[in-house]
Length: 231
Image (cartoon, rainbow, N blue to C red):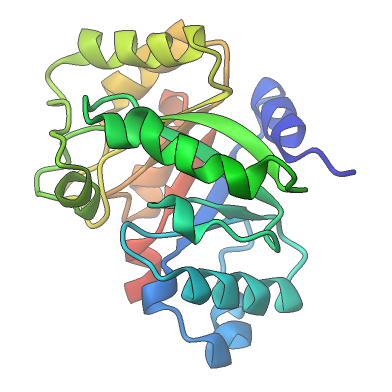
């Protein structure tokens, strides 16, 4: 069986940069899947599927439509346990460790167990850290938590390390969908320096220049969503 986390980790170890395109099922039209996938950057390595508020059936239909048209790994990035579908390849088992709302620290995870304990999905424990991107994002509204200001670099790095020490396999620094500005190079560099597990960075990346700066600072994988949807 293909091991997607192993592939992500090996790529990070070998300095191979990865690019995930995030698909929000609420904004996705299944009938246009082929056209959509043809627009993917050639560097795309993964497709993430999920959103803060998405109906389960819509998520499943989106995943199915994408998997019919591509061999790229389709990984769930759920905003709620109800979005989990067996037909995806893997699941980012997210814990919002930048916030203190138990619903997104552990309760959503407990609710997902009945779906996952006999699942064939590869489950990848992921520490999700919300960082201020200059505007209120959907994650902030839904979770009722506040992002960490970008000026608090030490707090962000310590939070990321707490995630690694807790057994998470990925660290995801998120500036939020449609952020005015992305996670700073300083934060990425300091987090990468401290961590021994792969680092994902998303939110507010709108240009090749911003993408390359994030890679150069130390991001192992970049996630693009809103910008790709509108361009």
